[in-house]
Image (cartoon, rainbow, N blue to C red):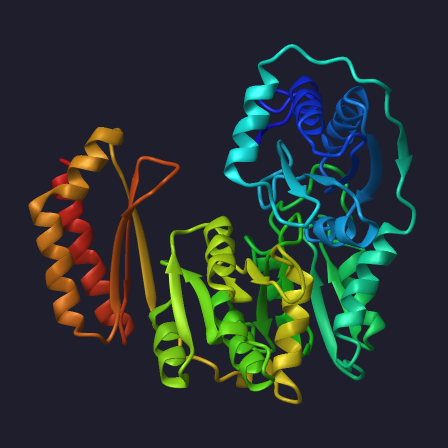
Length: 432
């Protein structure tokens, strides 16, 4: 659930959602963890969710500002029944959202979510007792302790990093664990004021961290998003290292250490062709899903694998936790590199990629263009011309009336030319 705070996502809606979720919980007195990021609407929604929990007979435990991945770890650590995370991830402060995690640390399944929606429409039931609200002391320390336990052998002594915490949920946890492991850390976007989360900073706006690296000699930089489930890296030369490259580093490292359960990795259709080529050469199987971390997680669980993620830097390692964790992913990349520098990474060769978004007048126009014979022929011709040296992806956006044309090829020139040809055909099919 995500939208404009105070308009779509109101206190009333948050209260009702929490009450419905607790009413349906199998436990007669559910213990519910509440975590939030730094948005100004977070405290309002925190109070509303706590009210809904207690009104349904549950107990609310307020953990304050923490990265999203801390929630499933803390639910498991403390044996709680449910977690609610209040965050709109990489969106600006005006938006907010609510994510629910079950007692096993995984997000609720579709059927449970649908049942909660149905419960929202029913008359509230009177509980046998009213629940209580309390602070969960030491939540930040518990999360950092979990990270330190996993990466205790990673020695960052003598290394210098710059971290962009997006004025969001990682602004305390990220520098604390890096320094605990011996690193010298400089911070940018680490002074949240309720309205500056993701504003010109973080993993969706890399200009600030690139400028910092240009001014000073760092081993690397890491930029997190507002709720801390994503990370992108920059090497000492300021070159962006996206999720594809970070997953490739992790896959090779985990395979070499015997930790790549099932011998495969799950990625999405947006993953660079160079990733597939590198994994094929290394004998690592790759499964591909639609865009979205939920699809990646579902496929991991279905196959019994542990590693997957997205180009955006949302990386899931089920050996660490059941959700994306930007801080853990950054540390895993450094562990994978060992004594090597990030600019000397060699897990994959990334092909040039071009993405063009072409707007349709409406959904019907979009569907008709996608099925147009000329578009299908153009896609087939482009694939044939690349002959296995790259790839073409033309897909309809799931959230906007857009057709996304993506091309990857060995050279910048060929990538641009193929993408331009395809875009012209799509525009013609749309009537542009």
